Length: 408
Image 1: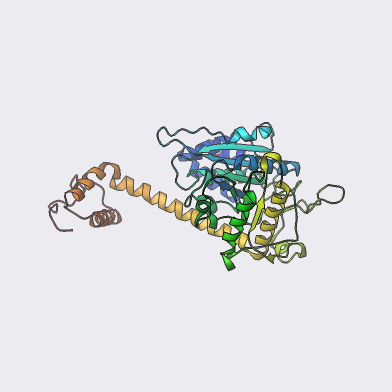
Image 2: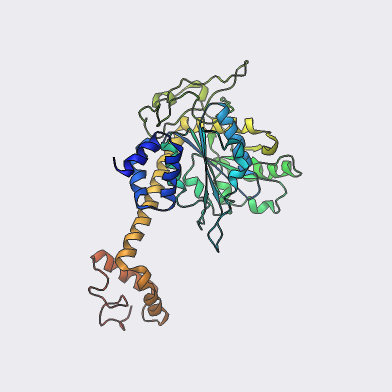
């Protein structure tokens, strides 16, 4: 068995060391990472992926810690990808998110991985998507993706998660900035955290008002299902690992648990993954139209978390019923393929055209007005498409011999 086969088998068996090793390969852009992801990909698509994003200091890590506790109490396994901003000067990062999750550090059912953003401008490190796929294939029921503090354009998490929690905090300054288009459009559930602080009610009203301006763009959800947890039903066989079952169709993850009964014990669905028929028209999951939810929590004091978990379950159930859950996942596969294609084409063109070596000469040509920037790029693309190798028919400057002074 070659090394790639060994690490693939170990990840599918849910071995934490192998999972950590696989994520490191992805993060470091190891040549074996692509083959590994391709081998793991058929085993993905079963975990629920929840993004948690918001401004710095809003209490995202504490909120994630509370969600972990609810999932573990329900018998579900949880993985966390926590992205911290890295220094623009040294590239280093404190990776301090896991400091707020120390209560779960020794729990074998919890895997926490901090990742530096490494200069990514979209709120996620470039390797986060593949890291999430590794965790999904490893059999974790719920994957929580905590991104760095977002601005108006740092919204990459929407291309990765099934559901987005957008976290606010009162007293952070100019609330109008936080309510601008962009980041406000990615949320499924809006959380006013630190609800014990002055201004929490005012901020909630402002968020609700801004969302009300969206009109018919509101998503559908259900008001008939309540839960204290959000992941795969306790006791359900994982999609991989020593108790794995054959992976089901993509886009059919676990259903949330239902309400706790009078005895306080949750009444959960059977320990199987429902097929398409189970999503057709189950009465308990009939969706009702409503605006996006705005909730107030106080994660530090463990308040409002049960209501938040119930809202998450409502939203996931409704999205499964009306088909938007599967449609969202198919759309994310499309975005993933586009991103991989662009990156691969960039690599191939860099190698063929020797971009790094040629760039200074290209800059010099444009600087001296020998050629326009669009014409130069078009010329290099034509060379690439013609299959010409750098230096075979061209001068060192990247222009055809004898044409240095021709007009663009």
